[in-house]
Image (cartoon, rainbow, N blue to C red; front, side, top):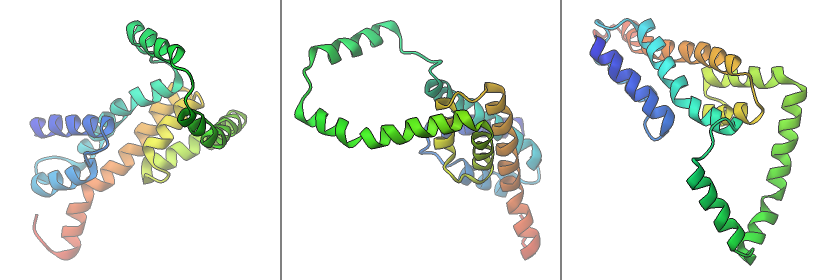
Length: 179
């Protein structure tokens, strides 16, 4: 049991860092094969903690708390200063001007109404709509309190993954299929 919990934690962190891996598919597969030995509430808690730990770097980077190492920072700025603006870069800047304006307006609105962001983030952590990754970055972008980020995220992800972990046993019970 402990081995499977550690594997679930690792997959949860990995899927949070690289969203190519589906933690939901892994969780359903795990609970279908090991449902009698692993409590679904424990799996939900372990996966929720792993997801929040995996999303913290995105939140902190959007918040501005994580900075590039000095040598990378200097290298990036040196290249920007040396290169003259190209027509392609100017076109890109003009095309993204509206999006940058929307983001700034959204940031200002979230600062004026902090409960909107907290409720949106909480709903997203349970349902996945709006996409959880986007709300994680947006939460960092609008400087949501870290305690609120972790608390709401853990609660929502725990509900989501606990229900998901229980679903194979519930479905098997309804259909009368032994797991």
